[in-house]
Each structure stands twice: as structure tokens, then as C-alpha cells.
Length: 128
Image (cartoon, rainbow, N blue to C red; front, side, top):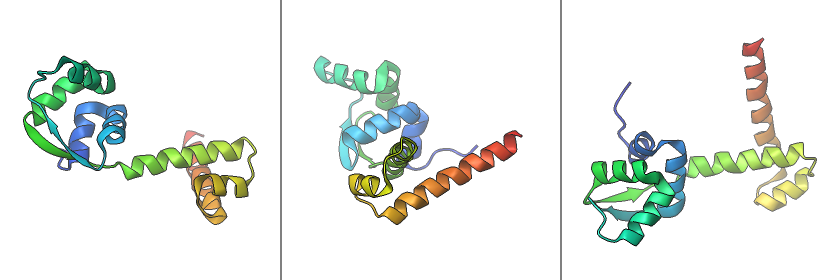
């Protein structure tokens, strides 16, 4: 397995999927300074509540003292949005209403649902 090279990959290796989502939601699109150690206990508590004690320690050990650009995680946001769209469709909500709610076209709602059905179909085929 190759070494992570992008900031996103490094964050993923340090924090895991949930941690990456948390840091991208908290700081995505900004450059932040990651301390070697926390002098402010309040800030340390905030970081530990968001990224856990272990995750915070890993961030400080890897990036400590550096300024790091945190990506926005656009792909993760789109994946989450698509999951909500699929759930709304399965709940019986009209395509037009979903399109308005998520500010996308009706066609895009159908495309998202079609891709999800294709993936589910492929999974069913490999499990049988």
C-alpha cells in the first residue's frame, strides 16, 4: 500500500473517515495552525470533543507547529447529500419536491437514484 500523499489522505490515515468529516466540516477551506501541544485547555477540550483524544494527539504529532490547509471534502458532502436524496425517494417524496429541496434538477435526482440502484444490483449479483 502506498503512503498517503495529499492532505486529505494523511488526515484520513490519522483520523479515519468520521474524523475527516469532522475536521472538514469544522475547518474545511481554511488554513489552520496545528499546535505541537495545547497551552489552552479550553481549545484542547474542543479539539478532543471533535476528533477524540487519540485523533487530537495524532494531529499534533504529525502536523504539530505547522499551518495546514484543510480541504472542504466536497466528495464527502455530495455522497451524504445523495444518500439523503435516495432516502427521501424511498420514503415516497416526489422527485420535483426533492429537486427543489436540494436545489438540483429533476433529471439529476433520477441520475442519482439510478446510480444507487445500479450499485445495489451489482452487490446483489455478487452476493448470489
